[in-house]
Length: 316
Image 1 (tube, helix red, strand yellow):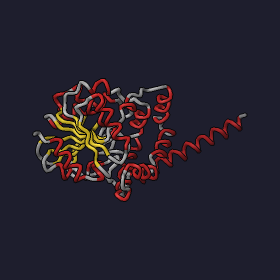
Image 2 (spheres, one colour; image 1 turned 45 degrees about the horizontal axis):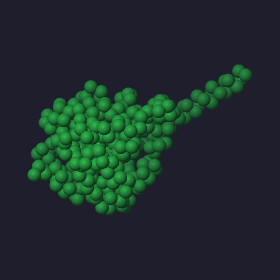
Image 3 (spheres, rainbow, N blue to C red; image 1 turned 30 degrees about the horizontal axis):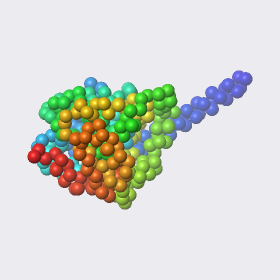
Image 4 (cartoon, rainbow, N blue to C red; image 1 turned 90 degrees about the vertical axis):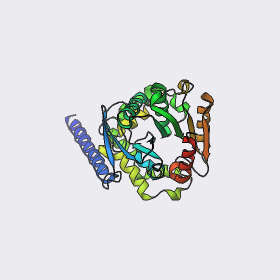
């Protein structure tokens, strides 16, 4: 029995050491080229961690928020910032837990991001802003508009998250998954499997109408973003999979008095269906569908996207 126990302990230690080495190697290789670094970058020292952002251009402030996902970052907006900064003071932000912002070990919730967005506008922008948000970041902006109406003017949501998905609450199964992903060794290993370069490349191909637009630099940038700071974006990923970032947005939509516009990728009918869900609860929402685009119309057709944004944000 003693020999069996010793063999088990030795085998477990070897497995743990191997997994640790694999995790460290993946971190080193994925962050080798520092692809996320851009010029004119700044940091906002928020109470829960550093918020990385960039400010460009002059004019009325426009805040751009990338999708709430571990591999996402403000690099998502690289194609349109030069275009929008001609008429606007453009702020691009790495949300807490993403990109070059801090990734503290905590439970990420909708309310946490509402606080972050509100404080960023108050302490960095210092005046009301128009906001463009993609995917799962759209509900964060909508909730911010309900709690701090004076901080936001117009909102543009790009393929916003489904209201049905948002209504899901933490369950026993999702809580178990949340705790497993947060485990230092096995959780990191699982995270590295789910966010390996091959899977990121495959998901990118599914998200684009024309996969030829996806280049190696784009995939490597998303891959690096998911693995910065020793894969601590897994804390955000755990909260997402645990349904802690969700909020039942439907009852709040009718309270919003701001102008809301939704831009969808026409080549994925699901996005148009999601947009119709929002319009059902707030009929004043205007929906614009961009042809030959899917998940990222602002990347797939940046010029057309910016032209549409200028029309929607026109004060006239």
